[in-house]
Amino acid sequence: MVSLSHFLVMLISTCFFLFFLHKWRRSHSPKPRTRLPPSPPKFPLIGNLHQLSSVPHRSLQSLSLRYGPLMLLHFGEVPVLIASSAEAAREIMKNQDLIFSNRPQLSIASRLFYNNRDVSFAPYGEYWRQIRSICVLHLLSNKRVQSYRGVREEETSLMVDKIRRVALGKKYGLGSDFKEAFAEFGVLLGILPLWEYIPWLRWMRRFDGLDKRADRAATKMDGFLETVIQEHRVRERREGDGGELDFVDILLDFQRENGSRTPVEDETIKAIVLDMFAAGTDTTYTALEWAMTELIRNPEIMKTLQNEVREVAGNKDEIDEQDLEKMSYLKAVMKESLRLHPPVPLLVPRELTQDTTVLGYDIASRTRVMTNVWAISRDPSLWKYPEEFRPERFLGMDIDFRGLHFELTPFGAGRRGCPGITFAVAVDELALAKLVHKFNFRLPNGAKMEELNVSESNGITIHKKCPLLVVATSHVF
Image (cartoon, rainbow, N blue to C red; front, side, top):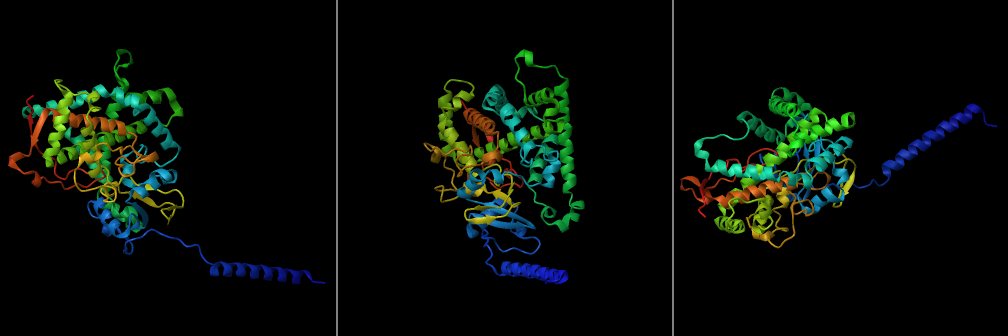
């Protein structure tokens, strides 16, 4: 008969034996192989940050030509997946869109957008779903976009009048402080501060001035937005006089009608309106500037476009949006300009919510993801003569930029694609049509088109580094 103490010793010994046997088998059993995407050599601590230039989309394209269309880089301690092919973009923004739909929490964006309460930078979740639904259904639906047709036509006509009367020195638009603050927004959003990626360098935040710059820009924008909201609250309602409600009216109505059941607080309204400013003015302006730049550099294409626009306009003094549907070459010019110069060449970063596999490579959860649409739209395997401005390539071609063709996604695609594509395209096409309809253009001081500076600025939105300066003369019909 075995004593109790002897039994306990045997039991404990057996448990230890089984435990160590299990550990031994685990340490000696074949481990699942992890196949990571190709990576350029990196330095300790900073990773691959030293390989980024002041125009990251270009340096990342150069790296992708050496290491492939799907690369794993490290920005300090942060793993970053770089997608530079249409196939990789399709995986991220369509096939696995849901698990790639989160946003990394960026400190500067958080300061600028009311702790990420906007649509672009809000983390994926219930709050984001609600405010995006509000924007899509109430602000940017086709019906709502069409309701602003009169405003677009009026404003683009004012732009033409401003060019005609520029010698009078009349000022239009918002004050210079607002414009400077708004320009600073774009620059700040494009900065990659070292302390964001290397935790032990966070002490640098006290000395590099970025937080102060962000706070100054945010304060100026907040003051303007607060004034707009209060003016909308106190002014007489316009519902009975046939006037169209603007974005702020709609959001305030939604807030009032839904009370505590809606996430639309005042700061949410400010964040959404700020999104609309960023997406509806900054990117629209830069897309128009690049289109005009390419037309100035290619006078034969400019002439072809002017002939089309003036033929469609006929004897009409003003072009309206109905005319645009007859201007196939105009639409090809805008597509080609957006191909060569996507306003946000790296899109807004995404973040992976779970482990997955992309094109045969294993990607870990929390990896940051950047899609280089600038590199994709210049991929010679997708485009003939990719560095040349050739609008004719789009005539008779069904490739569009609305998120269905991953060769051309300047506005992104999937859940995180830009919800304002219809609005932005309507503004750009109408503005471009009116400009080439009314004016002929040349460079000042007898400069040649080959001398036109096409270098790029820093920031999340890529402007021309030197603003486009041309001499406009009224066309005699």
